[in-house]
Length: 169
Image 1 (cartoon, rainbow, N blue to C red):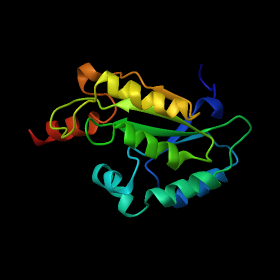
Image 2: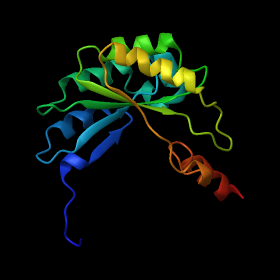
Image 3: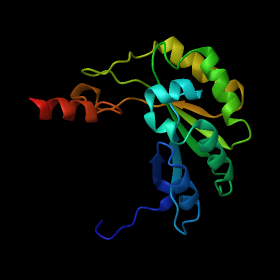
Image 4: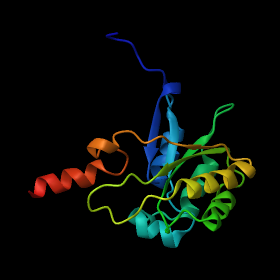
């Protein structure tokens, strides 16, 4: 397999929402897919869970998403980590539908992966399913990502925290 290139159609670049780089990325001649981590349906919650929101709020991120040049049949991916009692309510799902209106989008839902010293809780399976159904009913393809690496604290959101804890001991 040495020398075998991975086609750009099989790659995704993920961002927390660095708005100027989203525009730059859209102009690249070789461009993998784009995934944007939203993790909240409003600025108040997003600022709490993603401090980068102070610099580039949801309005700016979604405007960059609307301007992003999509290829035929391509959708922007939005990542949304569900946190019990924080961003997983039916109201949050309806807010997300409104945020994504007019964007060719798909959503990956990720139930929080629990780990040491993570100050949030994993939502119930029924909360995840309810959130997903609201988005699907609004015409947004929505998938629940299956967690991997939970047993070794290497799942999404766990690794940095665990590494920090190890380096302190």
